[in-house]
Amino acid sequence: MDTEKKDVFNRFLQDSLIKSSDLPSTGITPEQKAALNRKGNELFNRGEIDTAKRIFKTTGYSDGLTRVGEALEEKGKSIEALQLYWLAHNKRKSDPLVQKLAYLIRSILTGM
Image (cartoon, rainbow, N blue to C red; front, side, top):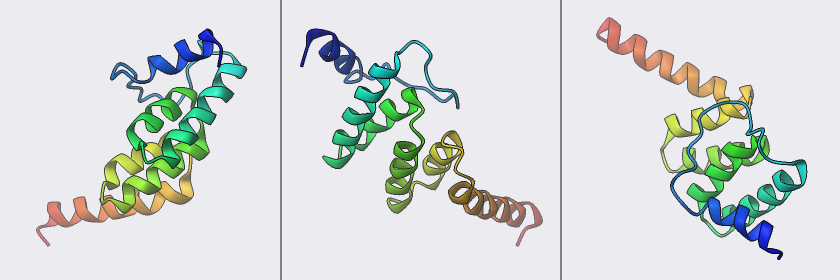
């Protein structure tokens, strides 16, 4: 792997990559984005979910965001999963969680 690619990957090993926008970073080329998505997939498959999540949030890779969301939902982290589904524009996954949260809030407000 050439030095430029290593430098790009090393940036993601730090905690500085926190993104919550639904638009991918515009500072990376399509080639860098593809390489990062491949690296994110490798990390995800190795169980390094948090690092993969940071990469997918940066690139806006919707399939990766959805897979990380599913992994988080399986661990009972529904709010984090909802954020990733929302960023991925995956209404099929986000809508049921939104409905559950709306029911929960309604129950709290009405004293049920």
